[in-house]
Image (cartoon, rainbow over all chains, first blue to last red; front, side, top):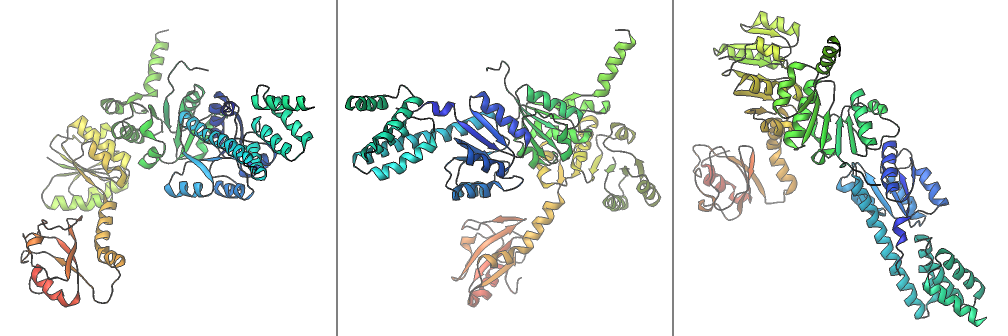
Amino acid sequence: MIYQEVLLVAKVLCVDDEKNVRNLMRKVLEDEGYEVVAVSSGEEAQELLNRERFNILTLDLKLPGISGIDLLKKLQEEGMEVPAIVISAIATPEAIVEAMKNGAVDFLSKPFSPEELLEKIKGVLEMEKMTFSKMERIAKSLMEKGKYDESEKIVRKMFSLVPSSPIPHYLYSLILSSRGNKDLALKHLKAALTLDGNYHPAREELKKYEEEN
Amino acid sequence: MKKKTKILYVIVVGCGKMGSIIANYASSEGHNVVVIDKDEKAFDMLSPEFSGFTILGDATEVENLKAAKVDRADVLFSLTTDDNTNFMISMVAKHVFGVKRVVSRVYDPDNLPVFQEFGIDAICPILLMVESLKGLLLGE
Amino acid sequence: MKVVIIGGEKTAYYLARSLISKGYKVMIINKDPVFCQELAKKLRAIVINGDGSRRYILEEAELMRNDVVVILTPRDHDNLIISQLAKNLFGVERIVSLVNDPENVEIFQKLGINVVLNLTSMITTTIENLMFPEEMEKRFPVEKGISFLTLEITNDSPSLGKKLKDIALPEESIVGAILRGGVLVVPRGETEIRLGDKLFIIASPDVKKDVVKVLVGGNGR
């Protein structure tokens, strides 16, 4: 089951020192149904990324304090997995290459049209979605082979990718169950169902528990 | 939220009183707006709600028009305070980059024919005023 | 028929002086009143103090269809409109304009200005031409046993008018490039050697003399 809602309730963090650009991003993205937080410096962005979960980060290269590239480097160092789109007026091949080398997932040059922005955002989210379902498959296949520890690593990543999805909770409950930690496993199953009452695999698994007890 | 009118890519050259008002208006109507001015302070005239782009530079230098992606513009307003500057920018926009609608402020009525000759829509504040004054004179 | 020089300073003066000495009727239009006074004193020309981009000034100058208009201001946006006024309102057919920014040359040409002079480009090209031998050496570091030759083709050159493939160049030599009228020509077998061509040759020192003889004869350089 592919989680469609990923695209609609995505939370975007926009970092740009120009107010008019922040206004534009907010207008375009909120119109499309995304949740948008816009800040004017890399420092503010870092703070927010530490506190809240975001699906996508957009940032300009030219920022007042820490530069866009340095922010990307820091995020890489700290292992933050938020995909970043660099949006800059400087669109030379060198700038683009440097951005991508430091972990940017895509690049958009200013000035851009709303269509271009939305296309890029959707593209990145699609990529993440694919990665998510791919991870689901890999996690499952690892579990089938009995490699629960490795599977756990992947499931943990899934948690941070799509916090609102029941799938990682469900998978984690399977892992916990295999280790004998039934109580915690049950908690995660319930969490999965809280996130999505219709998530079939979790319902089935819960039924099994109720039958066993 | 569907918009009834088509969304245009608008470039405004010159962020003085006229330029900033047009830019603010176009932006609030949902159009894609790029404002070019060679004086950074001029952008202060844009409203806090302005949601478009600003480019700091002299628009008579082609590279600044290119940075504004002039080839994609539906409309270009040349609203600097100098007729000759407006002429050059308008000509480049229309005849080199093919912008369909180019509107220029023209201060000196004597210059109007040249602009019109080249298909540039010209707004002459003095003439507009004269028309209004004529109206007042005749008691309209 | 007169030559109308609009804008420019020293250049306007020297140009006017030169044209007058050749017998042309010259008119000068310039914004600077002091400069205009000086010119009026020094030259036998009509001097109008005013802005050449204003229509009424050009009317005062009685611009005619068969005049030649030379526009020399340091501002391209002024030059452009002056040229368009002259062309469209007065029907002038011969317009020479200075274009300061190389990026603007295209626009002026597109708008039908016959002659467009860009000083920056011209000087750049000249410098590049002068630097070419060094550029070549930079790209192909001189090893022991390689010579670089620059030969210019004159009327006496035996290779003039011949195709490269028909020229008996020694084995250890090759014509690397030909500079023709400021443009680089990649030499091929069918390339014909023309008057004024600058040939850049790579050769082993032993055959240098033969190369020179075959291409330019005697002690050509």
